[in-house]
Every structure is written in structure tokens, then in C-alpha cells.
Length: 121
View 1 (cartoon, rainbow, N blue to C red):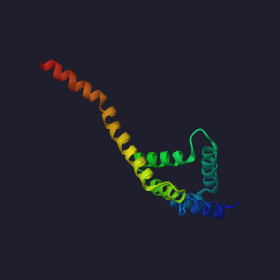
View 2: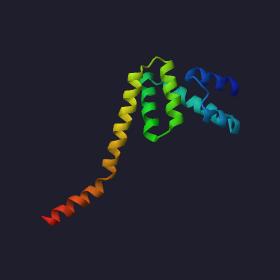
View 3: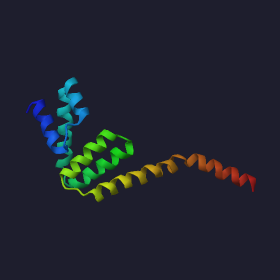
View 4: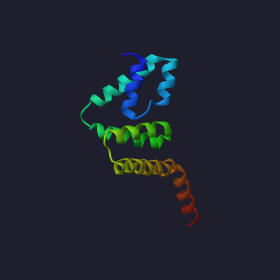
């Protein structure tokens, strides 16, 4: 398979050729092939159904703020028959988890505030 065929295959899977892969193919074709091989390897695993892997990919991309990846994964999910409601729940899950990281990251600050409050009483 050549790079053109590989990009066409990606287009069929996600509804459009992912721009990062298109640009990367112009810089280093082997990196695109490696990316695709890694994805094939991941999706060959069977403990987690591929539908859930895709929903997790949407959530992870959303939590990381990677709009291009979110769009690509959502297009792929729709092509594969994943419902809009399932996709929205994946996005809401990412929002919840991302939001709770603010609280976790503030742990030391909260300890400081609690200790300050205890000193005042």
C-alpha cells in the first residue's frame, strides 16, 4: 500500500483525510504508516470493544483540547453507527473528569487554606 492509498483509507474511516496525517505524509510517510499500524494493533485487542475505544478516544481528545482529533474521532464514530447521545455522553464524561482535575490539582492549596482556618479558630 502506498501513502495515497493509506490516506484514502483514512478518509473512508473518518469521513475526511485528517489534516495532521496529510501534512505528516509530506514530511515523513513512515510516521503515518507507524501511526496506522499502532492503531491497528490497538484495535486488534479484544478486552475492550472497539466502540468503547473510540468513545474513549473522543473523551481523551476532548480532555486534552485537541479539536482536530475530536472532529476526526466523532466523524469516525458516526460512520461506525455510534449514536449522537453516546458521543455527547463521552464528551460530558471528559468535561467532568477534566473539571475534577482542578480540585485534585488544588489539593496543596486546600490544605493550606484548611490549616490557615484552623489557626484562626
